[in-house]
Length: 537
Figure 1 (cartoon, one colour):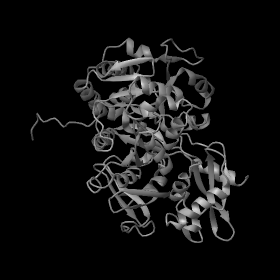
Figure 2 (cartoon, helix red, strand yellow):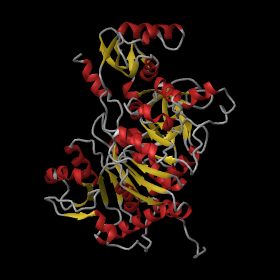
Figure 3 (spheres, helix red, strand yellow):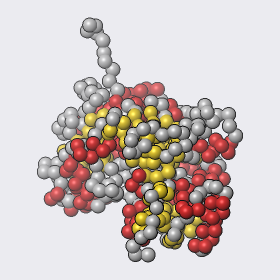
Figure 4 (cartoon, one colour):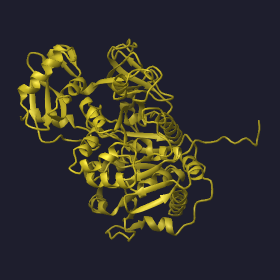
């Protein structure tokens, strides 16, 4: 055995080191407040890491973060795993009791808190872990006034030299934990080790270079996915790995975001469909048509409605779909051009790029019969099951729900889809959202897609309602662009049925017009709330 051999560990600090060496002058920008080069950011992160060590942070201890999408959060994405601790990205949109519950379940020993959230933490003191230390900060760098005894975040950086010693962190050590949005029950703890996060970032970097995105190190990212949500889809790590300027928007203010995109020359974003809709319908949007013409966008979290995709295309935006779960780190597939469609006409390529996409490097996807596990033929609907080197192996301290996640060496997503002849995935429903009418499934996402094509429809969501005869029937909730009647929508859908685009029996029994969609904590349409609304409307 060679005693001089070094087993290189795929740990998160390696991303920071390589990014700051190879792209030292690239920038990280936080609103109009602070900016760093990759070199100065790495120096600042290492000072924070040293500060964390000096206040007693130990390997394996969990540190929660309660913050908007800021430079402080970005520091913690790197510094906490660097010292062998575990980053817990706390969902700030949970009610206070649930925030406390996840902090207790994760066993957080420290909590990094932005000043405006301190009153919440003071209020929850009695239900937080005993002995947990609070690290507070403000944008102004002034010390935060609090009834709690807190440690100043900026002091941890400014009063310490960069960490020089190599911490004994293994690539298989836990690096992050967060809790799923819990719309179907108690939130579940999902965790990842260093190796999984690094490999995921590498694969996302690789696929981003493919057309139609064709991203390079000259692009400028502004990711509009909350940093508490699945590592902001991994992009804070992808940015330093790929050497791209990274713009942090702080608390979301859509008019400000448009101005910041213009000022910082943003060329790429990732988000859920709702955020794209809110940006395109913002009263200030017409002032930023020149920004849209250079903008490339990946949509995930929920299916990309065809109507929204076409509106984006009309504005010059390059938009693609993607797919993943909290449990999958999250990206599994995106709408890049694979070799099967590269030579096809533009319209065919566009319709494929706005699907859930094709598997990214190192991902295996099968569509199987949920009852038998047998693989489905091309074009046949079944459950998506996956393998990749970055999937969570279990729910934290939750063996019962882990059993339903992993079966036969495949992670079961609970999503219904088919794969087309080109290898692209078409999600037709979340298993829990599927509408079973007369023993047959009505795919709510395909129906939503059809309704979204009506020119007077802004947003749509379809849910199942109980029906004495059929078991369930669909009801469509619609946010209209302008005055539109139920009969207009029905006739539009009948025409699509005559053209063979949908089945006639899929057409909803009820159309409910509302002014805005209820959203989950991660800005997805909350179908549970809509189902409850059908009882009262």
